[in-house]
Length: 57
Image 1 (cartoon, rainbow, N blue to C red):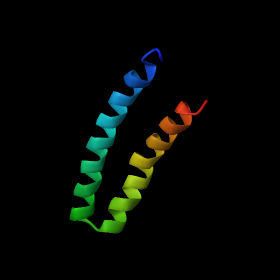
Image 2: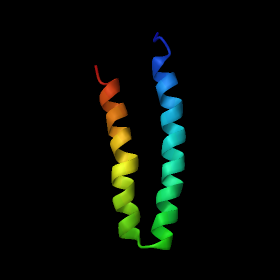
Image 3: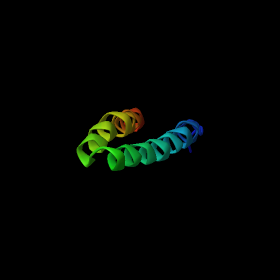
Image 4: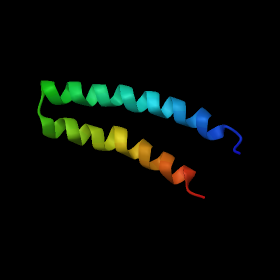
């Protein structure tokens, strides 16, 4: 059993990822899909990678 710290960290992360995904899709529709993917690479995948690295013991 854990202390619940992963839940405290995971919930804001998932909310952030959902909002940033919608923002990247919106940017991609207004400009081009390449700009949307470029923005998603920095703003969505980097925090997700840091969270996964935090979970690895």
